[in-house]
Length: 291
Image (cartoon, rainbow, N blue to C red; front, side, top):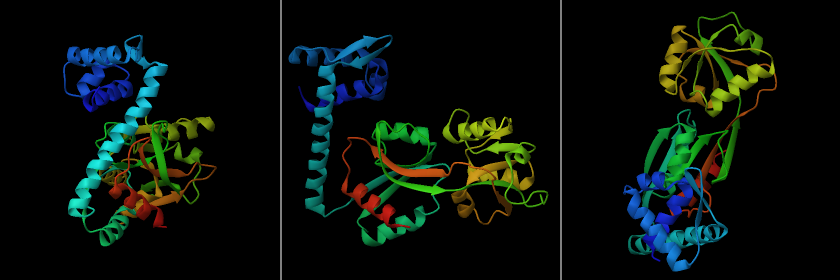
């Protein structure tokens, strides 16, 4: 059993389906199935049991997965440390950013760069659910996501809390702060998320708690477009305070929302049981230190 076979095994375990694992590994299904059979033959146990169209880890498979994570992480750590000894601590940090983003990020990256100029960055923006998948695929080192997201596979390194605001055109002077959900119900709403995702569901649930139905006319995960639509009077929206700080030049009205509305939460997350690079560790320290 070699490292390549361990990697194949880990991807099958994470995907829960050999077809999906083969697609992620960019290989055909038959050779992947053969590799699995070879591993099971060498070990003398079944690593998976079938359930419908998918596969589930057996107890033996769960034990191997725990060791496989440690082995592959140790190998990655060894490779980076060897490169670091040769070149000094250096490398690229790949960070995923939610479409609603974090207004502190430029300041945090500036502070990080001043302290550790040897590192470079790659920043990808996407919906939080997609960022979680990219972490699982090990395409990202860390991600700044908007809650709620399923966290079973991740470690949360830091959480930020902020209020939501009701945002309308600057020409709308009919409302005063705080504004109630009963009043918001009268407005056509543009949701900064997609149906089925966290923020969309949260807004729906808050209206439902009050026996109300929101008038959702548009979904837009592109925040620049969303704010321009609000500015034009096309509709109103509900967004976290960070968005307003990032787009201060857009002249819209923002009002506090009446009632016990949950805070908007964002957090830095990484893959649970995944190895943290030196750059990731330093970034988390910098993020935590920005108050």
